[in-house]
Length: 386
Figure (cartoon, rainbow, N blue to C red):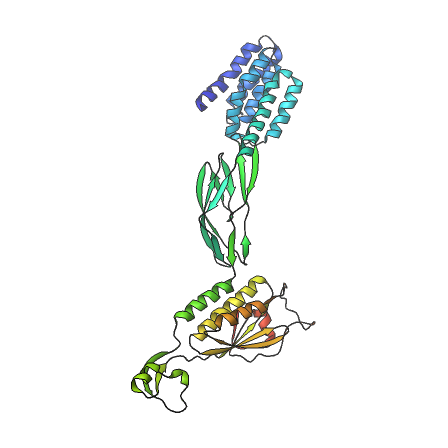
């Protein structure tokens, strides 16, 4: 097809000269076009076809009308090769040409018909997008999933991760995305349809399947529960007779029933250097607060694998509350910390707190967890800072 197009373009100026003779203006214009086709317009397509139309406009009737019609297929092919203008620009040029010479009306009719055809085609398309199963992620961690996108016309899709995918029919695209804060997200998919001549551009917006992003702290709490459920803080290494002062919870009931004498378990493990944890339940942003709570839930679970109970000190801007956390009450205490958390929606600056909004007295704890900038006023030594 391209070879035929090039051959017709090369031969057309000579045909124009024959048709125009003996009229001076169209003959000279056709001769100039022949020279341009061999030089400046050799590698140009859309501008070259409009030059052909300029010569056709000078032709005496009915040659002008015939050429205006016969050049439409060539113009269409040329626009598929190097066109950069929208249909509106082409319509404006065609309207001016038709006003100057009504015999060029087929050019204007083609331009408008092409725009109407592709707008109608793109408008009636009903694209579909589908994800495999429920999309769930943890805040701050990347989520990789597959999107199935189907269209009945070629389109470019702007994916949630910023990439552009070309869809023609049905396609599967792998997407990798990350959300810093929890919530339900439905990033909009932007579909751009483009006609083969690049004159008509049509945009559709498609809702993305919902992505459920759970807080870091919730995930840490779940992992902490699983850890404590299968982790023994102590293991029985043997048994001996009961001695006054031994805790009743260590009585070995099976051996006691066999020997008919009180027997207690000999246990190992279960020691920890950390017996108290303080958590600063205020942070500058939701992301920072989530990280603090994540660290608190993880640290508390880790300590409870080595200790029977831990003192949890909840530090808020209104005061301090203390809780006893055991393996059995781990979730209850962690949930309470989540409830008390407060986001300040502020930005830290190297300035003094003249309003006295932040606690400044030292907190007595083996370990303190909080946002770095807000932990400094407490003058702490051992601190997990986020």
